[in-house]
Length: 301
Image 1 (tube, rainbow, N blue to C red):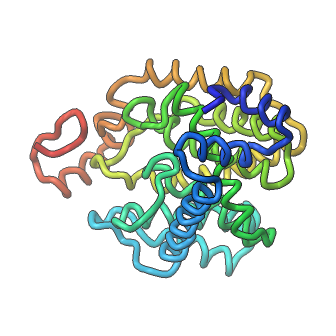
Image 2 (tube, helix red, strand yellow):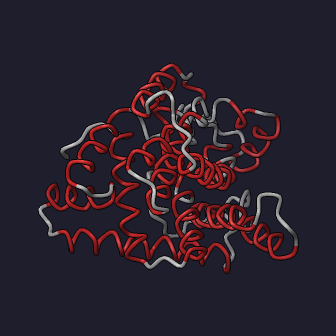
């Protein structure tokens, strides 16, 4: 890639008079050796998987094998249809769709990791609900996915996207930043505004630990995806309104690296701290695994 920072991306977009998504399509083709149309077609296929995961999560039984999660997306959608959501219909729909995809993941369904399986609901939740709301075609949405990919590329190469390395700020936080930046551009924002949205989103996720109950990507992962979609909408709206990330977004990414590196091991996807080690968390682990000891990766031995 010709860029290594978000500031590089903004500069290249300005020089070439393209959006972040358009720039990333060019870069992906160059890196992969494929034509731009081939790169686009591959991303378009990924978007169809995302939309199908939303549908499945809203219409089919998503109860996980553990029995810990499932069907909350459908509960939220029913509530949205019967009541006036405190969030408003648009944000509540995005939240329901994000929950749906995350529950499909927890129930062993097919998803696209964006950037990880643990954060797979946020981008589809934001994208699919926005597409329905604004009437955008799939081509526009796929270009938006390239924008999200460019942002994720920078985060991954300058910080973390793995909860085991940097906590949930690295998984859910990165997905929120990717969704916020891409949505800002989809709504007509400039590359600079999109980058501000990334910084605003990431600042709100700093320090978020990874503490999966029983070592499964279920509790609290599913609900964090729902909340993450709403946060992405908020960050995009702030950026479109002219709110700036006073700390440059690349510096915020650097802080995420610092905070994740300092995070105790028990709060980095080991199930040895946080919600996983509450009395209820321990009871659920015992119910699922009996008294078998667990190693530091959270797997039974």
